[in-house]
Length: 171
Length: 175
Image 1 (tube, one colour):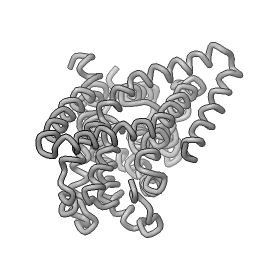
Image 2: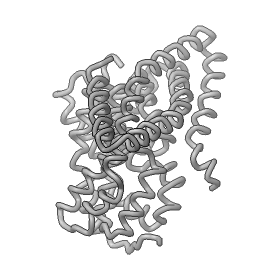
Image 3: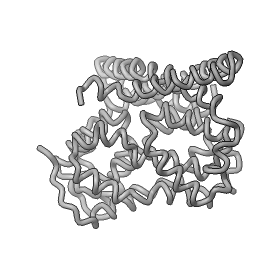
């Protein structure tokens, strides 16, 4: 178990301890809630991880280098931002895909833009949840307010990259 | 869209792409590549499983400790940069997927949170939700990438929330 996983478990146990102190009923509800989420998430993982592993085998080793490689610069950041919006599903899809693209030669700023594009535009989420719950005017407002964020993220990561030389290496 | 389809859309799309990619791998790259992909997927699952279980227990406990009603009160109709900052923190603390977050946004809107705060809340949740960072991003993409991306995107929900107040589109929450 890595250090971050240990930290995560420490925080989980502390929070669970607080629940216990508020009474056994709350602790049971918390554990049940966690268990339900696990049952919902596991099938997604069981499908998404093989999917991205197969994609990694199919994608030629250098295909991402031209379009999304570090040399692609701002153009690559723009392409990645838009492509991120089309990634369906939750983090169990987007992050394994980042690994796939990284193996195929994608650059770190471009991958940060991809993750941000997925988080900000997330078209499947808009269609399935935001539009029916909040309405088209709110979707338009939020999209306009966030339009530039994926590109800003890519450029910001480009600036910070010298301070994080190990980002996405050996993954 | 029927509720079942809506809730399982992601799984459906993943399965379709996954099966197509599996067939493609077997046909184009051969059985060895097929086996290699399955093994690497299985290894990855075992590697992140402890983090997933720990993270979901944390999320379950936090949901009990911080009910949504308390969040709504904190965000209130508090204008100014402070309202945006509180909304950003609340968004990062909100666990769960869109099926939990968007209905919560509606509740916050009906309770009087301003639209800039709602925009900041959604972006903070989708960009930097703590649960997602800890459960998925750190185990899969590593601490360096996660920290760097987090630092760059930390102020962005504030910026977008401020912009959201400026954009002249009239919106009232559906009742």
